[in-house]
Image 1 (cartoon, rainbow, N blue to C red):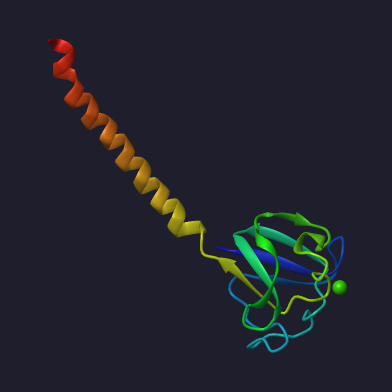
Image 2 (tube, helix red, strand yellow; image 1 turned 30 degrees about the vertical axis):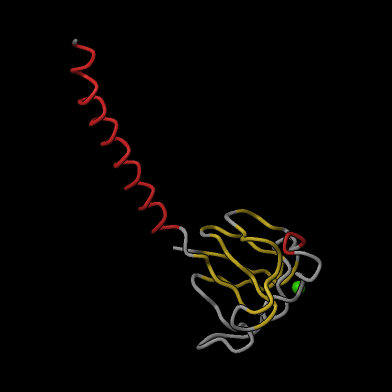
Length: 126
Ligand SMILES: [Ca+2]
């Protein structure tokens, strides 16, 4: 499960908020409190690759690419506009499906190697 924690101040200090899924609008969260809108100054990512945005509904992306698991004591990593500006965020779908795909590809590869060995065997016998 994707898991990020937003902190109000740099160095993982102040109010914080656990996020487990797409959060389209920190200012108007459904059934939640809006206190961390435009306030995030440090981030812990426990699982998943996340994207962060200045505006609601994933508009105006911060930084390049995604942030993966790690401790980010300030949000410089999201670029000069990153501090106190996050209003939406989401995990990029990578975890489950791609590792499943990699497992399938790995299994296919090992089957191909077995088949190649079977095909090669008679040649060596001649
Ligand atoms: Ca802050």
